[in-house]
Length: 137
Image (cartoon, rainbow, N blue to C red; front, side, top):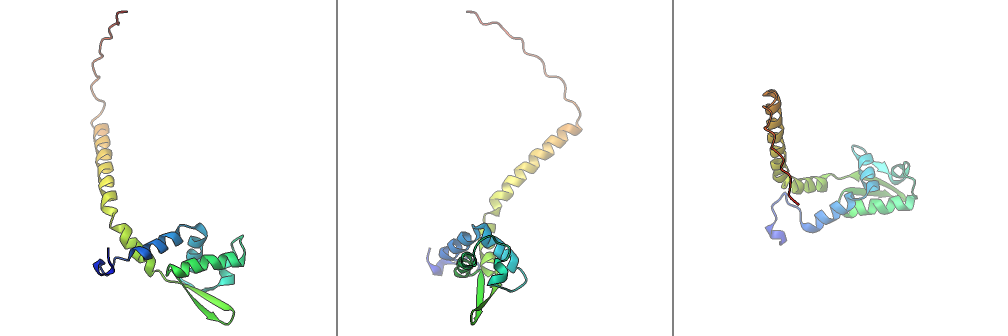
């Protein structure tokens, strides 16, 4: 697929790869959660993690390359900000496949309705017992 084949909402494959790779790590997801609605210094982001400041910085760089975080540097101070745009693009891509999930949910709902209908109808008539025959040796 070339870049010219993409619709405005559809991100290119490389962008999706970077976003999903970044989101695959629980530390990076926790960093994004902490950045939701506020800008934080790298040192503030690192506080709750039992890893080094350098390790947190590497996680932040993965998020920056994925376009999920922007950094503003003032001397040695680095302030981070969430950029949810790539997450939205990934959600659009995932949502494209929701029609398959919806079909499964519709099937499940139909089965649950059938079970409730049978329960409401009361006990079914007893099934006739089949006679067992002995096998000859």
